[in-house]
Length: 421
Image (cartoon, rainbow, N blue to C red; front, side, top):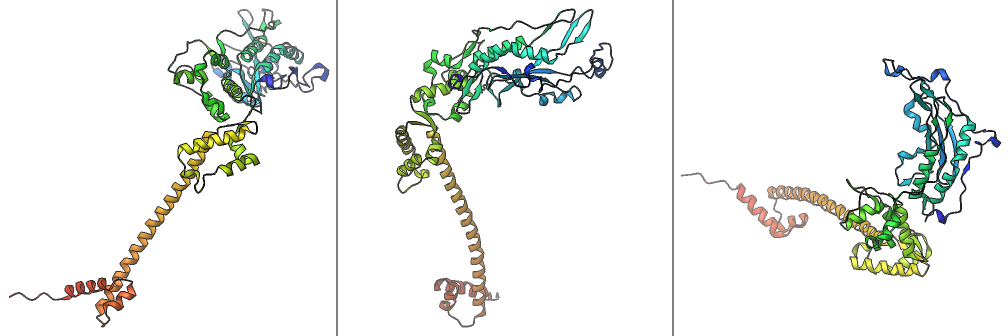
């Protein structure tokens, strides 16, 4: 699923950050000028900069809905925790993969200028200037929200080549310049074409169809995500890296790939045709149609733990055929059945472990009782009270001849050795 599958979104400045709202949500608190300075001649590091130079203003963009707003950090707070006071994550900290929820990214704004005559100077922006900047970047934000990949029913965000280019334009437009007099100049906004080195994984697979794996057609979201999450020690990662590694092929250096998960999801969607990809576990365990299909297909007189691989393959075909009648294609089905069998076999392993321990315990217990019984039989035989072997054997639950052999050994041990000549 891509951005085109979702309702159109319009880039906009968030309510409360506009002149017509009286900027009621924009509460800027820049440090006084006397707290913002740089003394390059100071010997101690903590005396080279004033306490207000760590103050930051930022522009925030919600890539999910296209909203834009701005704000600042508390210059009095420790600078080590500045990141926790931002509404989102700086773009450079994200990489080119999935954008974490809620999809908010920030652009930190520069304030420092320097020339030989004036030295270092800081220029902070007021709400009108920040609002003008927010308005200036809206076309690039619109391009961002229109082109970023949106995956699954929740619309998880993943960078596309065009969305990454749009963000570069946002960053360029939000990088101010100052002339020697300190006057502010914002760059003219651009709509930069996507560079040739930025490649969509979907386009890469279209150009190299022999690298596609047919199993993607029925893979679960988790399986597709795991395939896309390939990080080799060297070379390319993601889908191109893994497919080329499997095929023992090399990719020319110098490219950046985007939309790894989106490409796999799109492949599965095309393979499914008009059928809806549906998680196998969910369908078989939570829907009436799935549960009835499962009951009808249960191996008679056996659990999954006892079935061989060819039976699992047969079950896979039967479940897919049943789901097809409902307009579905089951994803992750083969893995689901293998995992179920593995769980049941693990249960049998635990049963054997319990039984083995019980047998060992009972055998040790029997050994103790047998030793005690033998001592008691020997004790009674030593009495020589006239009872027969059969009477004693009946008490000890032993064959008569065993008691007789015991009596004979006991008598031999008690017979004194004749004195020597």
